[in-house]
Image 1 (cartoon, rainbow, N blue to C red):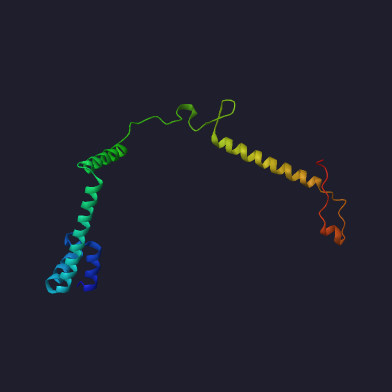
Image 2 (cartoon, rainbow, N blue to C red):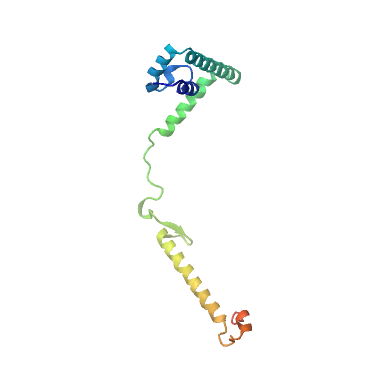
Length: 161
């Protein structure tokens, strides 16, 4: 059974035309309309609101569009959508043949992108290792004292200049 509160919520959501309501609610709504004058007044208010919205849309369309423009705009929209979803002619991929999956690097040489990535990783790792070795060599292990001042001071850097 449909409660009056649920009926009001459906009228606010779907309007005054029962054909727009969910099918499972229509029969119970029709039964409630036969027995309740309050339900009939709620549905009449919803119909009045639907009518006011329709008139406002009609007035807005009349002031914003010239005669026949809405139909022409809708036709343009439909043709544009149809052109976008229509099957396109089969074209070969951008990189076809033996160059498929390759990238052009300086000097006009073709190299596989995976190889470029690996070379970059190896070079970056080499630079990091070299920098670590150079920084480690700059530390003077013999000048480090065990006293408290030596612990608090940074050791001197040697070797770069």
